[in-house]
Image 1 (cartoon, helix red, strand yellow):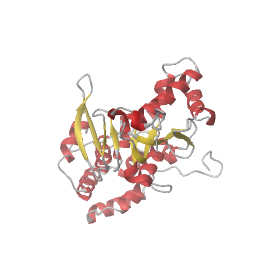
Image 2 (cartoon, one colour):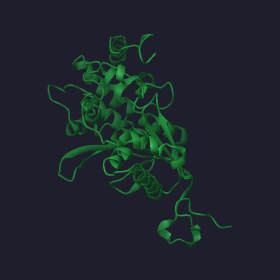
Image 3 (cartoon, rainbow, N blue to C red):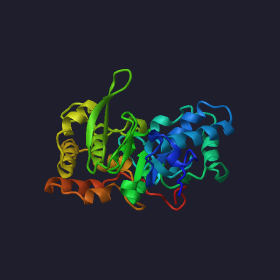
Image 4 (spheres, one colour):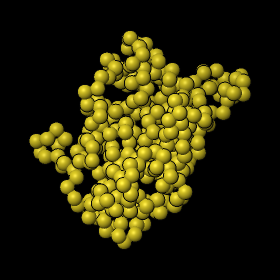
Length: 310
C-alpha cells in the first residue's frame, strides 16, 4: 500500500532518501506570532501573506519531519494569562508601547486563521485568554515526545520536550531540566541559549528584554546579563539547587521573585501558574518562608467587577 507524503503529496517510496523520515504521529507545535509579524513586514497584499504563511508552516513541518502541525496565535486583545495585571519591576511589554508595527499585521493574523486559508496539514488557533507561548507549552506537555516546538521566541526554550534548534538544523530530544550554553549573533554579541526549565531559571536572573521583564536587579552589586547568568548557574545541574540559588539571590536583596517569575513562566495546563511550579520544588527553610512572605505582598492588580478583565 502506498503512503503519501503529507506535504509533498507524492508516494513516499518515490522520494529520494532526504525527503523521507516523517515520524508517524509527530506534531509540530508552531508559535505563529513571529511568522505573522515577519510576513506582514514584507508583503503588500493579504493573499500573498497567506501563501507565504502556508509555505512557512509546510517548510517547517518538512524540516522537523512532523506528520501534522498545530499553529498558535495570540489575539490582539488577548488577556495574556493576566500578565498585564502584574506589578513587577517593569511593566510587562511596556517597551512595545507606541512602537510602529507592520501595517498589515492584524489583517494577516486574522487571514491565516480563517478556515478558508488553513491547509489540511495543520490547524490554527487564536488565543484570547492566553498567549501563543502558553498554548505551545501546554501542547508540549500534552503530546510529550510526539510534539516538537518551533519558535523564534526564546521563551519557549524552557520546554522539557523536543525543540527545533534552528542553528543546528535538527530536532533536539526532550531535555527535562535541561542545560544552558553560550551562543553568538552574526555581529559577535554573546547571547544565552538552552533547553528545559534551566533556561527559565537563567531568565529569572537575566530577565527578558523582549517582554520588558527585569529579572534579578543585581547579584552582589553587579548587573546580571546573559554572560553572568551563564557563569552563575551553568555548572549547577540539580533543579532544586538551581532554584534555591536563584531565590537566595532575590532574598539577599529583598526583591520579590513572584511577579518576575509570574511574567516569564509559561503555563503547562489551564490553571497552572508560577506558584504551582514553586510548590513542586524543594526549598531551604529560609527560602520557603521567604516565598510565602513574598506571595502575600501587593504585586497583582486583581480585576474588579467593572474592569475589562472581569
